Length: 131
Image 1 (tube, one colour):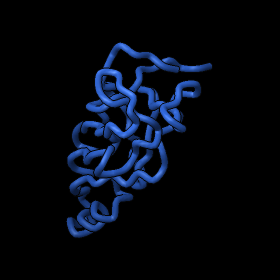
Image 2 (image 1 turned 135 degrees about the horizontal axis):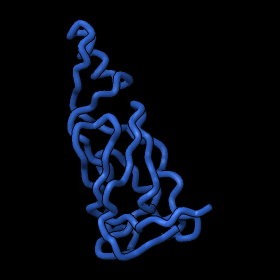
Image 3 (image 1 turned 90 degrees about the vertical axis):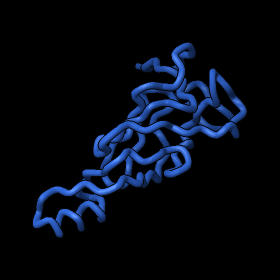
Image 4 (image 1 turned 120 degrees about the vertical axis):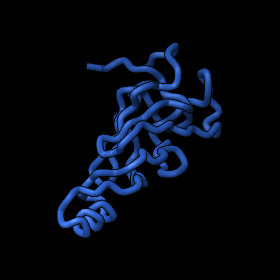
């Protein structure tokens, strides 16, 4: 069964399960496909370029959080977030491509190396639907 979602564009709002607040998805105009703003693909997953920090990270798998928690005698101590995403967004659109890559739809997720699940809470536009 194919789930219909919205095409994700620059300015989409994202949220990490271990982050303290939402962030914006930054999409560069290199794909040359526009909705209301540049459209995203599953390969728009580079930390610090596309995926920006989510405030404070509370993942115990994050070495800086683990170190700060140990220094606080086991009290969970969140530290500044710096996402580490090495895999593309999944699953993307099975039928819509932008260049060689599947378009990013609002039902896709991206995993952070520290265990966080990054989801799209607002796709950046509400007029273009894709599977």
